[in-house]
Length: 509
Image 1 (tube, helix red, strand yellow):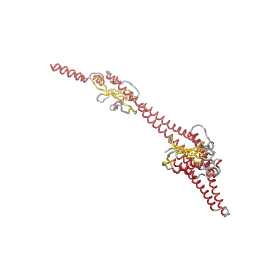
Image 2 (tube, rainbow, N blue to C red; image 1 turned 135 degrees about the vertical axis):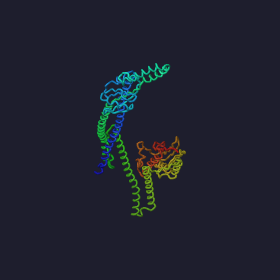
Image 3 (cartoon, one colour; image 1 turned 30 degrees about the vertical axis):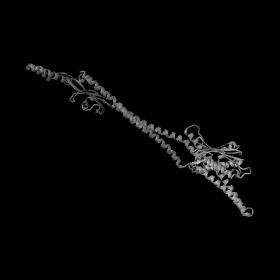
Image 4 (cartoon, rainbow, N blue to C red; image 1 turned 135 degrees about the horizontal axis):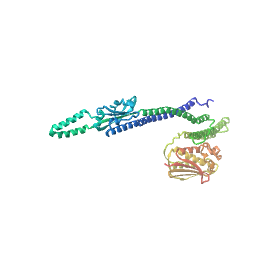
């Protein structure tokens, strides 16, 4: 039972994944909304502050235009608008007239030193200030300061001018010209117009927006966190179910499969991927069990033969001579050696450690040498000797491991010789960058249904069940593995001789 119980850390891992996903989503949205709120506040403040500033500029322009048109400062600044203060200053900075909200007129002097575009606090509120100058007639400015009546000094100056013009004779014309220039300069005065507009409404609107965002953002984050928590939990629920099902799969229960939820989403693809993995593991385990069983059977037979002959020799020393016993033992030892070597090659191929040396190899030399060996040592058969035809062997060079490629040729030729009736034909050609080796025999051939199976390990067809005729069932499997690691392919076709044709296709060097 402990084998199938889910580890304690996995449930916590699932919870932590759910928590981390929720926290990451909330944090990302919080940072985004925080930046948005900051940018919104800055932009909104600039936009809201621009309206009072524009209004103050309009007040300044209106009053300046009125002054330049000849209106008195008191008339030009007349008006009682809330949150507005307009002041006219003379060149010395003294207040000539002030207009606007009554509560603010008393603080008009505080605007005399505020620069254009600056801020001032009047009656406890913030105001934006704009200022400009207006060139007006001197009489207008004098009238503003004395109620519109001419001053006594001005009358005295006129009398003095009359006396001087009558008493100084010919110099009066020059003095009159100079005096006219002085009078023109004296008739023009520069006044400063200052306007202030309250920022209270803009600040109130900005504060209301920030308060709204300050309430809305946390609420949105809470809603997002709760939603993400439940959505992630629901998404992980089928994954957890798959985990429990996979956890119940053991080496003795590889036939179990996950339930396919259907569809084409990630969960369905995950289920199909895991089922495919389980299929491969099951096939590999079955192949391994079959391999072990077949190897045990193959090893048991020669060992049993050796033991049988040894026991007979011990119990009945006269029934068997030493030479016959030695021949039997050597023959079975050769079978054991070949079997063990074949198993070693396949095991190293399975581990990817076959150790292929990449050197140029003249494949035709290997084929010719094997043909000569077969002629010199044909297999022991009851029928006529095997004829070996190597006239179709042409030059071909490949890049690979010479001993392993030699084993490919040897196994194919030995297999053809075992199943041939009278003839084995070898051919080798190089064309289109490929080296193609064909080995034909005139035996019974390989049925189409069994042509893929003959390259499996310990597979021997019905005709070759006998150990003496069929070998160990590893020769063609070794051929397939060696050809594969050399980047080639091997297949079985029908031979023109009537039997089987084995074709090996390798990249030419």
